[in-house]
Length: 174
Image (cartoon, rainbow, N blue to C red; front, side):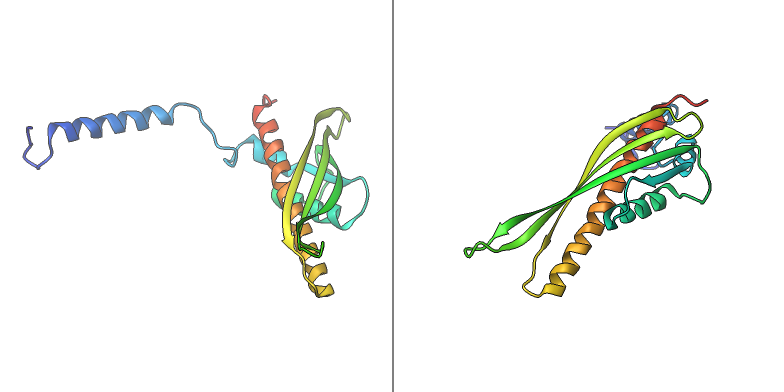
C-alpha cells in the first residue's frame, strides 16, 4: 500500500476519482423529479376541479386537490371531474359482535378533460383507505369517523395528484 504525502492511499484516490466520475455522469442523465419546476407543475396549477355531486367527502377531496395543485381561481385549461363513493365497514369485532374499528374507503373516479375542446385526456380510479377506532361515546365515534373521512380524502387526493403528475410528465410538451 502506497501513501502519498497527505496520508491517502492510492486506492482511496482511485475510489474518490471514481465517485466524482459517477456523480458527473448522473448530472447529465436527464432525470427530472416530478416535483421539479417544469411544465408538470404549471399544468397541475391549471386544473379546475369540478364535483359531480355535493357531499362532505367531495368537498374535502376538492379542497385537498386544489391545495395539492397550488390552484388559483380562474377558468383553467384543464377540467378534472371527480366522482366519489364512500364505504365504511367493520374491521375489529368484539365477542359481543360490536365493532371496535372501522375501515373507510373512498373510491374516486376522475376524468381529466381539455377545457377548450372537451376531449378526455385521462380517466382513472383511485382508492384512499384508512381505518379508525370506534368509541362507545356517540360524539367521539362521529368525530373519529369525520377524521377518517378527512384522511381518506387526503390519501385519494395524493394518489390523484401523483397520477396526474405522471400523465403530464410523460406528455410531450407543446
